[in-house]
Length: 392
Image 1 (cartoon, helix red, strand yellow):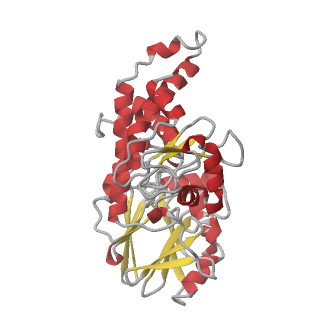
Image 2: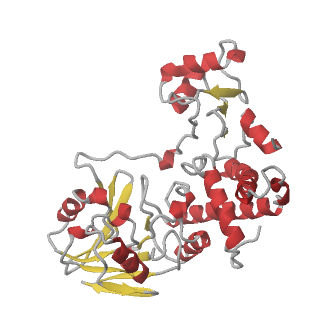
Image 3: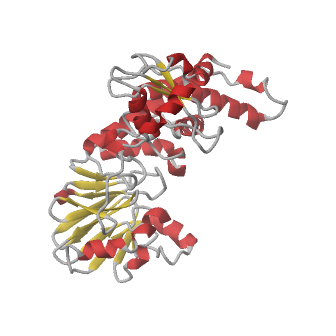
């Protein structure tokens, strides 16, 4: 076991930054430790990490070396495994700015961007629409928005939906596109090709397509569509409404959160990084990332960009510091897949520690898929070998 693996398995705490939580999470048996801060008690720790003040007794039983006392600052306090069993994991707490927000009795939350644009949140899924002088331009329609989206539009205008814009083809964002059969459907040519092959009645093929850019000029509002190249999915576009100072790019930068597993099965990991660069060129106040609990600002885009570029840089460093040859000696002769898998595992272990030190407590879910995403980056770095990105 490497020094890093041994430290992780032993629950050695990370050195936290000013914004980080000193929480060490093992990948084995769900073991986790919290480093007590000034003012901590067993009851405050139980409330914060276990969600119930009465569970302080579990902490006391797990930490007999406390001798029935509250922990001193700097003391490691072991946290219990998930009640689901020993093969589950304990995860870092969600930062305050990334937590879910309450919904009203209608079951959705409508947020205004400028004087003509709105974001719709239903559960962890997001869509948006722009009210023009002549109608409504709808930007995505997740399947879970099928009931709420028409109601939300009707709550602010009685104008018809004239256009529907596909951010990309994935059903969790456009699975209710058929709600607007009379609208002009606009999407990237790649999206049209994917949807034509899918033959899903809920996602009719766009009637207007483009390859590089397209502008919808409707009722005094301009909706600028641009393609930054393959990223989360081929055809995934940037939607910019300059008059309302708002933009969308789905499943690339998630305000307040680390990326989904394998960057949502990204078609191009380098493209995910490049798309962040394109977003940073926009002068906007509001940003829709497509998922989780809030919308963002340009600051959230910058934070997401810093995170994914940190991951890329640390992955490159780990690749350079981890020769592949020794791993072939650890497996049966000829089992190249197994040797390469061990190599990718070792790269991810080396790269994850500095990421966890810096980012735990700043973004939600940093620890959840970090190793998986680092391995995804390592594969991309090996086969894509982009020369326009940092080499580490």
